[in-house]
Length: 200
Length: 200
Image 1 (spheres, rainbow over the protein chains, first blue to last red):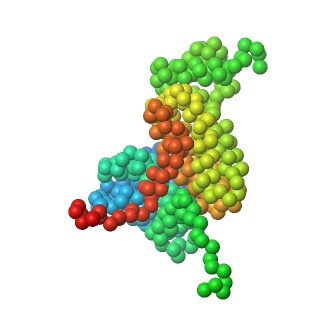
Image 2 (cartoon, helix red, strand yellow):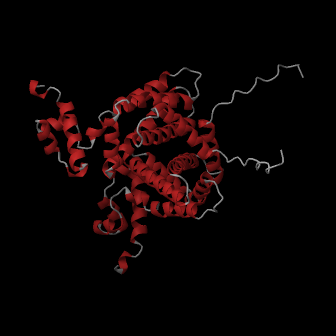
Image 3 (cartoon, rainbow over the protein chains, first blue to last red):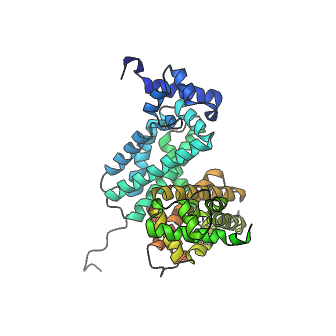
């Protein structure tokens, strides 16, 4: 790589974020990103397949981190606990970025194109988690259901994180989302009505 | 519509299924489908955006049926129960088709292109269910988690149905998948070990 391209990926990423935030994702071209970064379109396409992928360059590392953590969880850990612990660990790495990760989330929510790409990444993550669970001996459809639950919990926690001030840590948001999912799907208990006042 | 095109959509659909099953989805062109149906490519594109969409022409009606059933469930029904009942009702309509629905499922599983399209339809279904739940007054993230759980349950039940002989009815498979999801995500009970033999 020629010396003048050192840091090209970082420069392109920063230029793309700046332009997407300034003008809106839909109104930015690859040529403009390359120009802002002082590079060529050709260099852009050496790093990214298209202008959406700039926002997803971290997805493979994130997925690998989740899969590794699931695969390496202690043998006696329940599948859902292995998945949740993996999402806490890998997700905390994202949320530590703070404002950058929030800006990314707002951009994704601003574009149906980006939302579709995010959804495809989440399905890939779900499938990779299911494979990792099966390699731990979890039967097929339990692995698949657990992976789907894990991804639903992650998405819920991440959206809540992105739309709050970050005063609640990401691990708490993950466990809260898991509790909420359990509450949403478990049979409703109809507790006995409280004793009327004055009877105790 | 000229008289000779009467039933064109049905003829095109049947021709497409025949060819996909004979040759594999990837190896069939729109021109071949039209020819087998005795129609033109132009007619094909009046009914379908591309050769994948032939397999998803029922998706809007299915989604509408689910959404209507969720929206019209009695007011005191828990959100997850409204969703599950809606999926049982709408899904039974599909599984009553029997072998045709199984053939469709096998085709989808044979092609990554079709699997991606199916996934996009399932995400659309999930989002539509979440909107229907919100219109019933279910708070945002509970609606979203319930909808995700419902779609995971539906996919699990449908895959099991497609890979068995149909002797277990679709409603039972839905309720079984819901039980499995609950078991997968609920905290593990560690029951007391059984009494050793001879102590009772």
